[in-house]
Structure formats: C-alpha cells, structure tokens
Image (cartoon, rainbow, N blue to C red; front, side, top):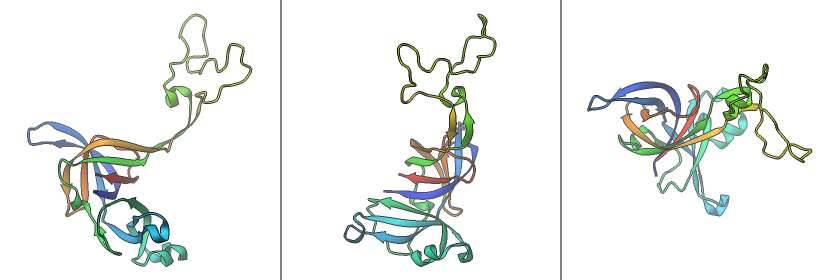
Length: 200
C-alpha cells in the first residue's frame, strides 16, 4: 500500500510525450514521519500515525509535545493496514509513488457559505413567463397533497461545501522526488493549501 499526505498547490497544463495537454494538479507531498505505532494488543487495531509539516515547538501545546517524541507537527494522520514494516521516526516521501500509479485522493472541499437550492442542489427555479415575476430562483413547493409537514430529507437552502470528498482512479503523471512534488491528472478537492490524503 502506498500513501502520503500533501498540500494542494495549483493546477497546471502538463504536456505528455505525445504532445497532448493534460490538466493536472500540483501537490506538495510529504515527507511524513512515523509518530506512533498502534497495535491490536494495546489499541485494538493496527495502524501507523504520521506527522506532516513540522512547526516550531513553541507553537504546539504540551499534550502534542508529550505525545509526539520526534518534534512538533501541524497535522497528525493515521493509515491502517499499510503492510509496511516501519519504525518510530521513519520517513515516507514522494518517491514511494511512480509515474502512472492510480491513486485515491481525499480532501475537504471549498466552503461556499449559505447558498440557495439552485447552487446547492441544482434546482432550475421557476419559469420566466406566465406571470411569475419574482420566483426565478425559488425552490417551489416543499409539501403539497394531504401532508401538513415538510418531509424528512427535503432539499433546501443551507451551508454548502466544506465536505470530505474522495475521488478515485486519478493518475499520477509526474513525480519530482527531489522537491517532494506530485502531479496528479485532473482536479482534486479543496483550495490552495488544503490537506490532501493520497492512497495508491
């Protein structure tokens, strides 16, 4: 199992060997450091906990510094069932991936605030004619019939975005192990600087 944490940078145009342009996203991936090894005897499951993006120790609280013995990190993340033999303090960098690998990418999508049903759910709104003057972007009926209540699950306006999104079957088109960067074909969730989980 291949895995790493990274930060989304920006989208670029990548030209392959045949001269075709490929839309791709640049990700600063790793290195990540093993901060804890969990096993079934003490924790009930086996996993590796990794720290990503080191920070000054004075910016971390005492609980973090007491738990992590290899320094202070902005992000801690676990990967289960890795199948790897790692020790405390070992590093995993972008070189674990190769060009052509198919990966699953997860991250938090952009938050869009409070939005109407048209942007949030793709409603079409009311007709532009037949006397409807102020209902172009309204949701329309929410009940109807003999019901005297709003059914559960009715799609309405509300906060949009900020959800964990997972995209499968994305291909790595280039690996820069020296600068810890990955170029992934297509778009991935989040804004610039979003924490991204990449599993292959």
